[in-house]
Image 1: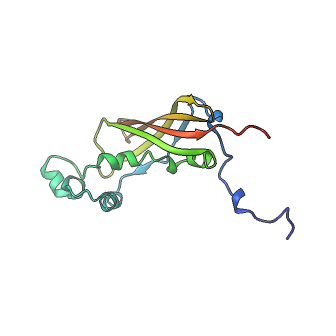
Image 2: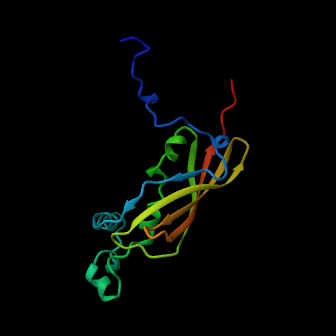
Image 3: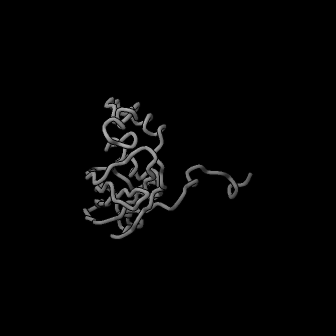
Length: 163
């Protein structure tokens, strides 16, 4: 095998690395849609340890006027994890850290709802060698209702100076 045909796993990437300087306000990163299934509710309950019946007992929910189990707020926030899309692949070499997150819950999410999540760059604050990239996170349901909105901040390196 020649050097030209040798496989190097470091070059096996989904996209080219981007740095703070490469992003623009208004860029949008849609995440794959996801239907909230019984299995996702069970997995979240196991991971979180939350044991309130509103999140795992459908008969309890029906007795309280709900059509099915209600998603925990953190379960909804988790759907905006950038790792479901391309953003983390873009910043593989430039990401210094996930530094802040907030969210507001505007509607209910039940088993069977399909969620459409997106991240949109709203602010870029440069520092000397890094910058803070802020994204608005949104979650809409299958009826087009905004059920959650929030904010995520990432610290990214600026593009290295040419040698």
